[in-house]
Length: 212
Ligand SMILES: [Zn+2]
Image (cartoon, rainbow, N blue to C red; front, side, top):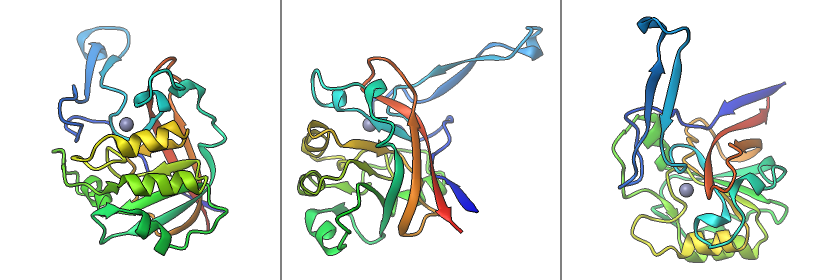
């Protein structure tokens, strides 16, 4: 039997979104309580809200968009590593973790996950993310997918280099995971971004399955 862990965050208002973003809003267009024959809602958000996938087109002009991403990369064995004390994930951290060479999907459980768990709805700029040399380490190791537990794979005040290195190399990036209930180890990841033609990213539902 497999245990299922939902590592997606709820889309709701309020929730933390990137500064300058339009935020998240669900608006009723039709309502049973107003005499309409059904409930119908309208969704307002940018595609980098909550748990979502970045496609190369996010930072690389003319690069692949989200509906073309390989679903086989988005499903399969993933290693979760816990870095509770870390403020910036560097290449040195990654080297010290002694990650097996067979790993192709890597998810980082940091102190960020607590922000989702505690339902901190204001954006927190001091979140943990990857430095550019960590991004290069991931590319050099042939890792195909990385996941982080806040809204960006690069730190708030860093240059776009972390994104650029990963996305230029075709590494799929999942952002906005809640890994609170996930200990370090191997899991089966299933992450399915919405099939939005031409978009540089898309909201996704992500789950982990573990052997019990
Ligand atoms: Zn993004």
